[in-house]
Image (spheres, helix red, strand yellow):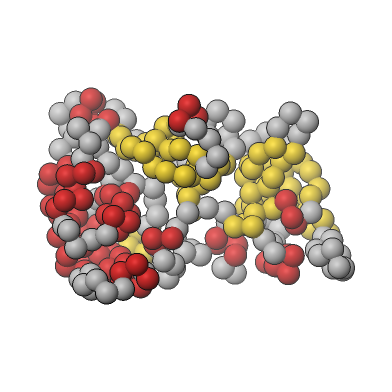
Length: 251
């Protein structure tokens, strides 16, 4: 049974986009979703969205009540593995600050418009990162690992894939402008467009060395020595082939 249509009917005051975000957050962060600070931050983000203009203001207590109700109705998954497969889980768009017990947004996403966040997922077939078009379904494995069924941008249903929501889904990487090359440092995790004779895909890589050069009318002329995580191959590339993680962009 698909829980999402029933959940969306529970509180008509939330927009479809808001309910989708709360569904994503309900799974692997279910304890945090009941914390006051978590719900207050989420309500503030919702109220900043242009699409809510003219609609009632979202109150944090309404957000908390939504999570409470849907935990009670939708998270009874201990009965069997078949039951577990049908329950919702979220990509880790919020993390927990263990030092003070408060929930917070990941670095580089603080203050972002949650409704506009885009995601990328790592395929288990080639370990490359692809932009996510849609999250189609959710499930928990018998090991309690959360998975989401994703459809990638530019691909059809035949390429839909179940991926681990904890380590294979994240906020989308950002292309760097030529004026931002100084933001990239040795040791940084980047996403590099790897071009091979038979393929061209985006992979995680670490910056090993940077040769700073003067920019000209073509833009940044710096060279970056990177090492790909999936096969340990090293390559010197231009900035135009690199994307940064939001944490790098925020430096």
